[in-house]
Amino acid sequence: MPSFEILCTTMHQTDFSKIGEMNIHSDIVLANQADTTNYTQLEFEGHTAKMITTATRGVGINRNLSLTYASADICLFADDDVVYHNDLEKTVVSEFNKHPDADIIVFHLETDSIERQQKKYTKTKKHLRFARMPWGTFRIAFRLNAVKKANIWFTPLFGGGCVFPCGEDSFWLNDAKKAGLTFYVSKETIGKVSFDTSSWFSGYNEKYFYARGAFYSAVHSKTDSLWMRYFAWRTRKMCYMPYRDKIKWMKNGRDGYNQMLSYENYIAKCCQNEETQK
Image (tube, rainbow, N blue to C red; front, side, top):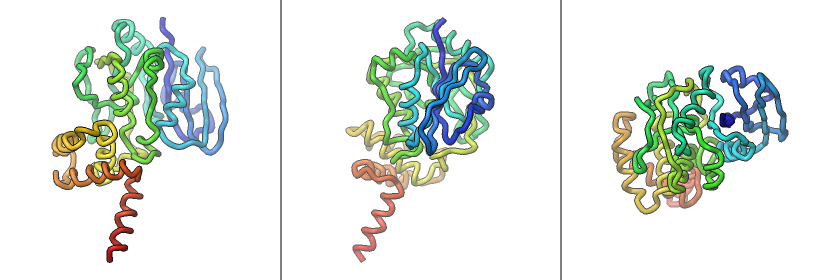
């Protein structure tokens, strides 16, 4: 049987209580951002929990840290607001055994959030190369050797705690696709995720579209205008912001990306320019 390990990002943990809260019954790496730097380890139920605590900030840095300490054949990215089913390890490993050509398998998690429902697939199948990848990182399981061989890491510019507060998952998936890794989507549900609190998502507002514009500029620099128009149309039922305003804020995000300015710093700079012109 292939070995299995969960790679979980978390913050300000002082003990291993997340193991019980998340219903963990497997090996786990907890990449913990706090105000100190240390390493602790716990043996439980025949499994090993590693906690790497650093004073760094940024979800990309933290996920890269979990990847650095990963050692299992098959790994599953996790956030600390997920509660897993008892048979998690068996379910994930079984799907990889059934599909030996799969480098990455995307699983389903239930949620109570109306705004952020997760796409569920009716059968396990290979994901087409040019199809959308509407998945958060917490849904992604992968063969560690395939990811290491392809040298895929998370960007430190995108995601919670970074200059641009979202998009690190799409960035990673896009790099994996470019590297030629084989994707599958699974019909299996492995747990439940809560979106009650979020370090970055506060609704489909100006800041959100600013971040999307920065993302499209970074990943699709030659066709970013097309992606912006498509995204403005696709979110027509998700928010009440006019199409024209969505485009405006995504273009602002593109400008912000070129200057490496967060939304807050971009606004401050615009205000400063307006004062100067008076």
